[in-house]
Image (cartoon, rainbow, N blue to C red; front, top):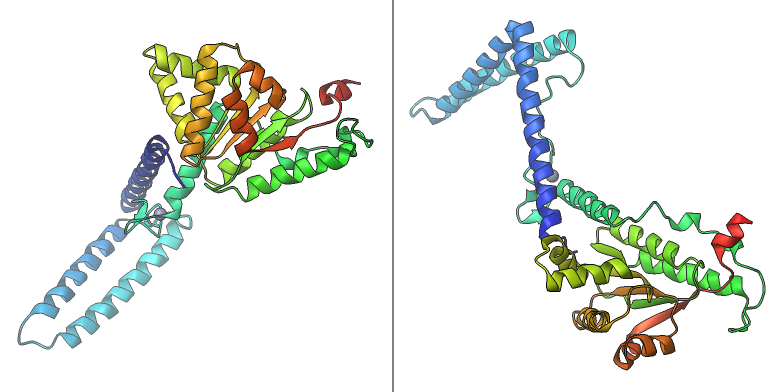
Length: 325
Ligand SMILES: [Zn+2]
């Protein structure tokens, strides 16, 4: 799972802050407790003293440390018991709990060289925020309504529309569940208002929830950023353009609605090709047919889509019209 350096550094900063907060809260609670119950401070001092004494005894030559250690241990137990009783008497449960922010890694985020689950979770959260910046809503597969699709034959495919859409839905759902770096490329094709944007947003959210980096972008916005990244010193556009290439899953919504032109054609070819070469999955949704792709962009692009993308059909009647009826 490839988290970008930016996601990782935001997650680590959050963990460091949480660790600092926890430690200062622990210190503050202890100071307040000492002020309220001075005996606690005395107990802690004695505990530290007996520990030091026991350590010393263990290293003193010529004497038998067993008896001393045993005495220190009993002493400690009594002190700890008294401390617990005072705590229960004067403070809410857990008030003097001085545990670190994470029991597994102590708040460093790593156990040896392995990333701890606490940091992993923060990475997942930061990853999802990136997606939210790109305007993906709360779409989820459970909200998909098959009954918006007519229960009759599609004239073009000669198959029941609802049957086609049920298959499309299941394919999308499985794709999201089983997503990996080796997932295939998908081409969502069909007219406007048949759920392409909805289902691609569902995939975006589900795949991001599984911890992958996902970029979801409308074609217009995507080409605008690529153009700015190439022809101006726009730092943000350059960052976005990098992410189009490096993210685990790129979803381009509504390809064919952007302004046409030479730059767009070249940029699209570059994007499709680079992601194919690096083996990174891409989903493209469009109203265009492959033949229209050839006319609007180029034969090479049409051929790449034909050869390397699995076509997912969207059929039926415009859902937005049905909803308003
Ligand atoms: Zn941890």
